[in-house]
Image 1 (tube, rainbow over the protein chains, first blue to last red):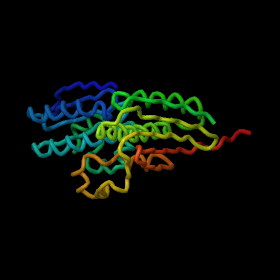
Image 2 (tube, chains in turn purple, green; image 1 turned 135 degrees about the vertical axis):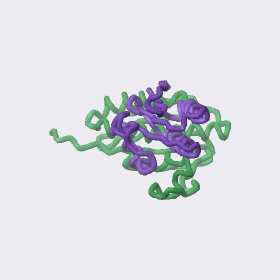
Image 3 (cartoon, each protein chain N blue to C red; image 1 turned 90 degrees about the horizontal axis):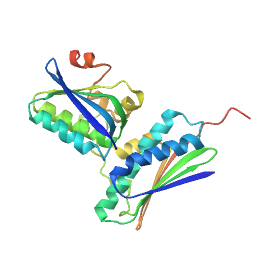
Image 4 (cartoon, chains in turn purple, red; image 1 turned 180 degrees about the vertical axis):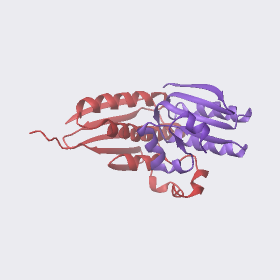
Length: 112
Length: 145
């Protein structure tokens, strides 16, 4: 059970890099961290999933929750994810149509 | 046929251990299975175990959750056995299709859909004593011999 986040600011976006596993055990802490950022005024969020080793449905639910929260605060959520096994989960559940998956941080910040 | 069985306390802190054991057991006993299929199986098993742990917590059930990996010539079967209230997936509220924007109103309920997509066969056997979820991934046939 391992999850670590790093937060940085790039061109008006708050970038959260996630390391480790996102499951039932770790999702609550991640959700709390992200909600805290949005509530503190960082509603333009990029979630970098490149260092995520594992993601399950609870993690997907957390991402949906944060997507809705950023948009309700006038912001947006963008994801960086190139790992096929993680991208596949977004494709299976159709969430890739709601939250675009970007190939790099530059793409996420520059793209729409 | 080889069987590896693990009993865990009904707590989410043990999910990563379950994944490690499934990875090691299936990886060594079914070497022909691709890493991608093994990853699929680990997600499906995690979903089943998460449901099992929740069932124990909801019902204040004592005793462990059992994870049993059986590796046969044609398939890998992982059974997750809990002592919760007996879960019937048909009783779960139907959610909008993933292509429906209303789906985003629901942050949970994706677990069963993932299990059904990622495993080749899934069965749920509820009983008064709990639920047995069986997840099967087919092994590719060897081209040798």
